[in-house]
Image 1 (spheres, chains in turn purple, green):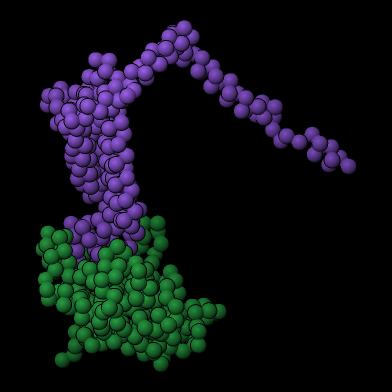
Image 2: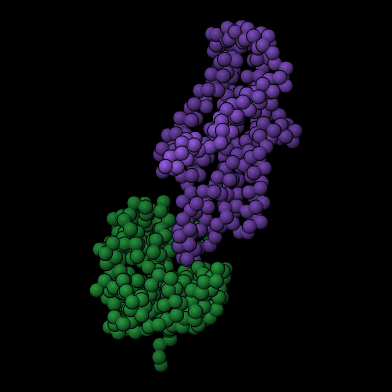
Length: 267
Length: 256
């Protein structure tokens, strides 16, 4: 029974090197971790020292200073406005880009390639960098924040809108075209109704992201509550830092909650 | 003086980019008011024939004359003006699923509106009245504000019929309208299609592969095989031999 012998040799089915693949991964990742730490000159003493400072800071955070709420509510609302306007502008431009870039209805392939390239670029450059660029262009304040969020949103929404349109059942477009409808009518009567759920749901998701970004953009001077956050840490007023952080949390949570309600409603 | 055909097709050819010769020279005259049924197995070219007439496919050869006008090559605004007179009914109904039933019927009016007012859905009161009337006629008056995707297949196809009629179409092209329906719904849809087009004096070309339905409703039957017409005649002239020739020896499409 020579067959049995073969089975006995073949219990593992792979060479020893392939069999130990998880080990190689573990070793590789550990090496990467160690190299990164060494490269940054981190040492244990500094980490412990940092822990001590963190403890002091946390101590000073409590109780949070709610007395500043009246002062920071204005910037908080500005943050909200920046996010909403940025998202709104982004959505409007993304719909146009999505329609022109969707493979099944694009006026020409070159338009498709150019617009998909453009949104890939605006997506690749982070919102923070866009904010810095727009601050140079239009000065400090909420305007560069709005523009940065709008441009960065186009990167994501232009892509997903185009993809949603590409997924539409071609028959609906064909049927409306067969009635003698113009391209504009086809877009508004066959394409937009079909992609509405995707459109709404992605736009709300983006609003969610933009609220978070908007809070951070203030750090580089693009308006809103981020500025207050940085100011409080510079002044070592950690009780105010905690209040501001909590307020940002409430804002983000509230927007997320409302979004989920709307998304459940639109099907 | 004899009546002019509403549609006159001469040597129509269509070869797809992959080399498939779907139509190899089809010639056919369709008389005004006729209810014509085209039969043939899948891939015979029935669907391609209809789609060449309203230019959903571009024919690669031959001549199409509609109502005395050469429409072999039309595009842009001219094509849109042609299409609004040619209603089309699809196998997959092709309603805009997220629009209401009445909105779907109103789509038939787009070709008569300016681009902007159509895109904004500013249909006239008369258009809306006509849409409701058509929905009542196909037995869906009560369902007019229901979303299209909540209707059954047979109901969706009846909306498809109403949409085509709403175009004030003079010629309706029905591409396998009952292929996805059960026998009962098929019966209803075919009856409505026949009845409404008779009442409005609309010429109708229907692709079917159910021979029994063809015999029941057609004024004239066309047999298409491998992109060529192999039979033209009255329903009673469709013999078993004709069917065997069209569908092959098995005759598996014959339910009778």
